[in-house]
Length: 281
Image 1: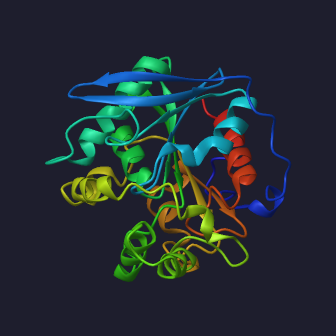
Image 2: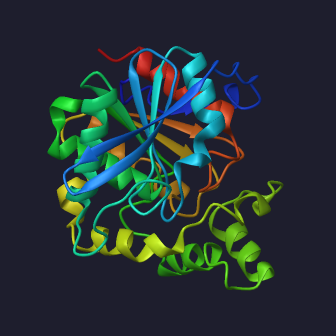
């Protein structure tokens, strides 16, 4: 499943598959990470998978995905970003290295010292930074709905508009349709779940970290989940990662999804991650 020649898979085989049963219980923990304390939701038992949310959103986005992965035999760790729920810590003068340190502390505390790290959209930058800075802790990296190396600035403006509760609902819905949701999917499910108070901190941390510092994800195996209708990764950029990193990358294209991906096709995402994870050493 990791060869470049067979890397691009038909996600239509995954879309519409029945969701797996939810786990019996869900717990919470608080992990100290230097000057930060990270609130973590824990599901299941088995090899560890860490789920990281997109810009200015929280890990509650992954409730259904965590259920499916736990039922498939994985230990799912969902750290909340600094400033969300019980997660605390400095928010100024940060880089992606600081956020990667938070994730490393979570893996040490609750991942038996090694984990697959899944980053959705902005979260994939943190996931890749974690693999660069802490390679001994990362079995592999899943980059879900990752943007291409470059993309139109208007899309960043749509992200800001979509997550700003002070703007008219119609404006926010239009931005969600343009940047996040494929036709036929209800963007209203993402009118909530935003934390604009942490958005500037996260963007500043990314701006303070050269793209070259995290782009490679070190030497970790990579699964790229591409949403077929994602404006951040148009078809002409489909081979960007495989052209650069070759057989280290497996690409799965998820049909009928855009940049939001997880709420649009949760079963497809869960099955793709579980299948790939079982093939890792």
